[in-house]
Image 1: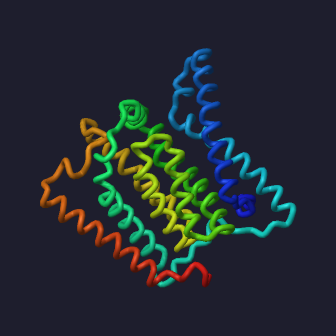
Image 2 (image 1 turned 60 degrees about the vertical axis):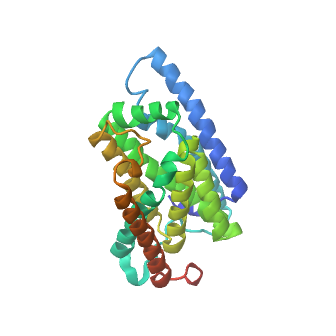
Image 3 (image 1 turned 90 degrees about the horizontal axis):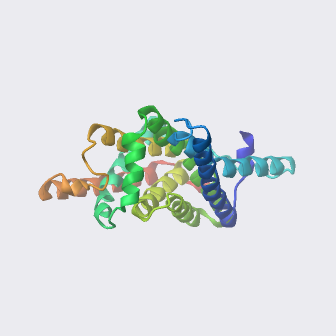
Length: 274
């Protein structure tokens, strides 16, 4: 795993990783479809297998180039270097989780901004409702947080920050994170949550923290889809509660998010001073 510390791509290198991801997703999707026709089996239609196969090419590339750079004496830039300061680990994880929950409320109006395409609804229904529960949990709550955070924050953001600074790194890693979701309905929320994850990674240096936040976010979606299957995936919080309660909740969420940002800025060591 030390090879990961030696691969830190530029923005151009990050686009190569995205191209490998999208190309691999298409190629292996076709392969699994062919295998399903030749030897029908639920294995080939497993969501977790399809997702894992889509990630093979970019990570083969990362490990290959990382190994070469290590042998050539490139300096290591650690993927995971947590610094929590006086807040301690449990405090940072708890505050970050609250910030992520507040962020979901802040982003809620975007649910109605772009109509959810029917094909996206069909994909969500297959993954969250009609897929085996264990397969769905493995794909959305374990593999997606691990692979996407390692790729978007651990590789892309870390690399771009090394060459171009943290602001560009946070922006572009969030943009590419939104892009790999491959649908406009998720793009804006994914971009905004990507900004939050990127900022958290920048301030703490802890990749496991963003993996935890991503897992928490996806687990809530998976849990709600199973517990309330009749609630549409495009149902906004504002559609479920009264206007007065919604306004109060929204103001509280904004205040909570701002409060966590303030505490992180005040009590976490400055990244440049580590």
